[in-house]
Length: 233
Ligand code: ADP
Ligand code: MG
Image 1 (cartoon, rainbow, N blue to C red):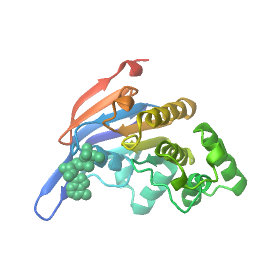
Image 2 (cartoon, rainbow, N blue to C red):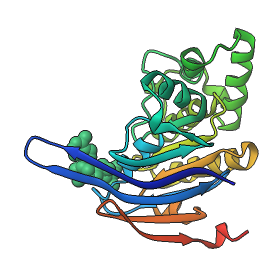
Image 3 (tube, protein in one colour):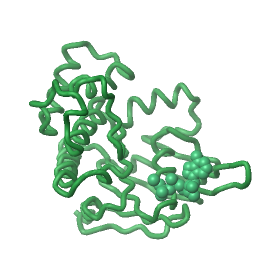
């Protein structure tokens, strides 16, 4: 069954001078537990699309359904709640809070969206830090970590609420090869273990070659959908 359905999704940004169609009449379905990547040149609409999938933005026309809920029909508050319960985010710049420790950064979403008792919070945070190989760094602050370590903390933070979907916009763009490789390995492990769907926007061939389905965007429109060898199984 498909987890995500886009039907004729169009997003137009209206600026003072002109209208920009960032996503153009896009229809596609994404299955549960998939590892998919959106590729395409800068400005092709990848981030706009991820924002639509992440309920951070609304399509101008068309519908975005996730787990049978038409998310663009939800109001602002319902959308925020849906996002908190179903979607995790990983960003290019990690977006860790500098005044919180590694442990506290990962714990943070549990305060924001879910009412989880302290002991359970701690258990979940430590288990995830262990999985991303950052347990021994739990009391450090972000500025004491390398880029790859920061991104692995961000991955743990994205997964702590057990979301169905993790959206990652250029997650390896600021990482050296070895760190990027480690992060990708961790993401794969999470998918296999939790059945989380990972959706990337990236140029990084190291991610693209791991993807099961590759969507190529051009000027906001879907140019190609390619099921790779990894997606045949
Ligand atoms: P990508 O992530 O592939 O680089 P984006 O989704 O960021 O592409 O951008 C797609 C198009 O939409 C670009 O032409 C960009 O300039 C435009 N765009 C993105 N966000 C906005 C915005 N908030 N206001 C106006 N135009 C935007
Ligand atoms: Mg982008």
